[in-house]
Length: 163
Image (tube, rainbow, N blue to C red; front, side):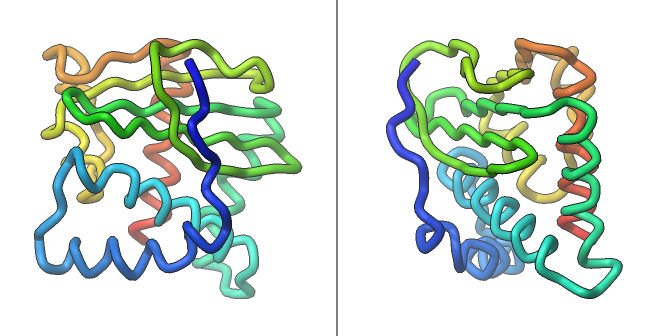
């Protein structure tokens, strides 16, 4: 496993607007737009932490609570048949998103690592706001390596993002 790049802040900024336009037009692609969605979620987390609005602060508060409980988390997302693989890393002091290649290996800097490999259809379901992928998991459309409890954590984050 090799981290190809960590996105710079200016590469993440504006992702919400691009994702929202595709969401509103119902033109999202489960494979091609996966990285865009996770960049938008990353941007939303930063904006949430900077907000004074209690409702908008919810996403950052949920992630902050998770960091207190787990220390640091790395999520590796791979959409079957698509070359772009996304990694998100979060700790109490740092948060970043990037791309990786090769076969999954845990990130040594993270206390907990979760790998999720899914079909484009499963990815589309998630990036359209429905992170409940239990049926896809049991059907083999979603593979998880790492604690299942942590694999379901992003459901709360995505729910807060859509709120």
